[in-house]
Image 1 (cartoon, rainbow, N blue to C red):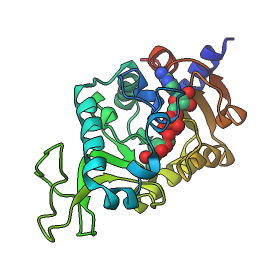
Image 2: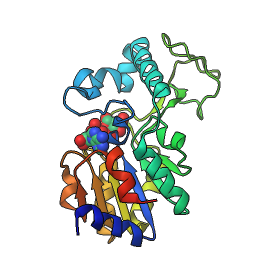
Image 3: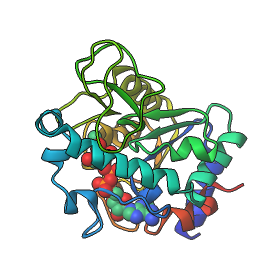
Image 4: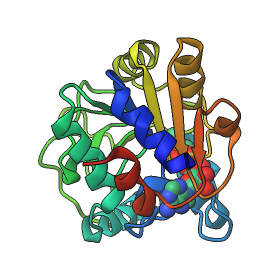
Length: 242
Ligand code: OAD
């Protein structure tokens, strides 16, 4: 039996599958990953300058323009066959949870209805000084960050920056899903950023199968029941069936 057939059989018999994704699942939609050689965002830009609160306070316009260009790219992108295969599995398997590190909203645009965004979303903003809750109807001038309607402070992207804690409720849901699942399908992550990268290990410790899909080997290969080396857009529909 080929690895693909073994993975297919594991998906078929799974009762409580969870899908965990990273930037690689959106690569074929034209959204750059973070660490792929040359094309990765962190290869081209300084994460200290662009993905920290200190960087934003030092130069809010620079950071805002960068996120505005990423938002523009996401707006022009389309969900790819990997996003669509995950959404289709969700229609066949009631209660399927998608846990993502991505901030692009492409899982939801593909039709996935229960998505935990561990690192937030670049489609939302919130007050830099912590006024409660996301802000709706903000002016999307790509040059300058809009102002908080409550306190007048700059609004920042509602994403997790380096050195920041993940949204507590989202992390708890993801950790509980990793404990309760009998299969975790891990797609397109380098598994280098914690605490998100711990989830597949939590799932295996709880007795679940892990299938990983990535053109490159990662630390997940060591714990995977099946590791498939290829592109998510080309493989996922065949792995998840439907
Ligand atoms: P990375 O850029 O670290 O890893 C992307 C992974 O996707 C790599 O292992 C690639 O080999 C793989 N990949 C590339 N193309 C693929 C394809 N077509 N199909 C499947 N896999 C493919 O991105 P993440 O692991 O998501 O954090 O990074 C984790 C976090 O680091 C991000 O959420 C972000 C970043 O700093 C925050 O913003 C907090």
